[in-house]
Amino acid sequence: MKSRESLVRLKGFQVTEKRRQLQQLQLMMSEFDRMSKELESQISIEEKKSGISDPGHFAYPTFAKAARQRADNLQNSIRELKVQQEAAELALEEAEAEYAKATALEERDGQQRARA
Image (cartoon, one colour):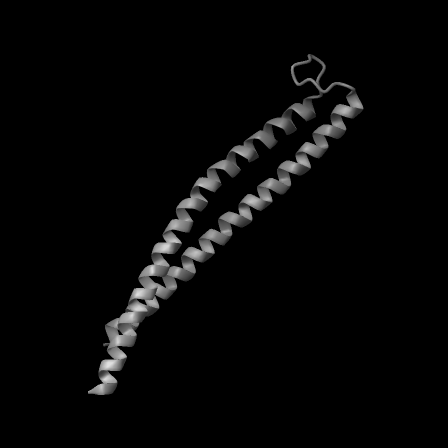
């Protein structure tokens, strides 16, 4: 019967770990989004200062060009993290189902021991 208790603890730990991983992905995505918006703001300011908003223009500010590339890279990273988030959500659902199953088995065993 101890093995069932340890199984429940293990499944509980796995659920907690999956939740932590999901939260970490969400935190990274929000941080990348914040950084991207900040860069977009800096790009806008730089374009206004120079009077050139066309990235293809020969006199387009170097800082704005670099910041635009960085913002694009951050948006790509956010899209990749969204894919990872979807996978993490599925893994969490599976872990929660396994935990519920292990808990139900433990309760059933507890009831059988109480009757005996």
